[in-house]
View (cartoon, rainbow, N blue to C red):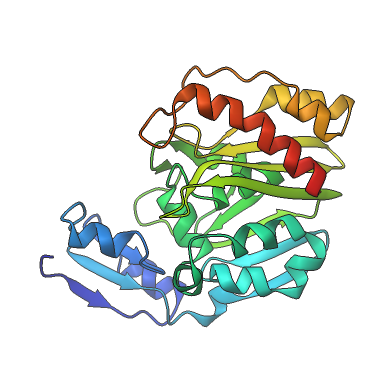
Length: 261
C-alpha cells in the first residue's frame, strides 16, 4: 500500500472542500481498503467520514424512511423504524456479509462503490429510492450507470437515501457461501405506483426485471413470478454460475420474495 494523506473532516462541507481528483472518501472501508492493499486503488488522500455523526441518522419523514449515508448495515437491520415500515430492507441489511462487515460497512459506501453483486442497489432500485448528495437528489433509476459506475460526479458525496414506504416488500438472495455476496439477489416491492422488481448479482449492474413486474402487476403471487421465463442474454457467467443458471434463479427468487412479502 502506497503512502497517502489522511483527513478527518468535521462536516460535510469540510469533507467536500478537502476532496480532489486524487482523493477518496472513506466510509466503512470494506471495499476501498482491500483494493488499496492489493494495489487496485491508490488514492493520494483519504477523507474519513466516520466523524460525521449527523450522517448516521435513521428516521421516518412522512411516507419515507431516510437513512444517513454513514449508517452501518447493522444499524439499518436493527432500526425499529426500518423494520416497521420496510421489513424487506431491514432483512436485506441483516444478511449482508458477516457480523464484522455489517458493523463497519455503510449504505452510502456500498452505493457509491456499486459492486455488481451488492445487496443495497437492489433495494434502491426495487423501492424507487432517491439518493441524496451534497449537490442534488438522484432518482434510483438514474443512479446506477454500469459496472462499478454511478451517476456521482468527482467530489460528490452521498449524504442520505430516501426510501418510499411500500405496501409490502421482500428480498431474497442466493449467496456465494464465502463472501456472502449475491450470486443472484431479487428485491420485490408493491407500492401505490405499481410493482418493482430489482435484480443484483446476475448482471454487470443492478437492473429491473420488467417481465416479472408485469406478471406481478396482474397477479401478485409467487407462482406468477416463478413462471416468468428470463433471458440469459447479458447476464454474468463465471465460476459461481453460468448466465443460464442465473437466468433460472431470478424468477425462483422473485417467487420466494413475493411469498415472504
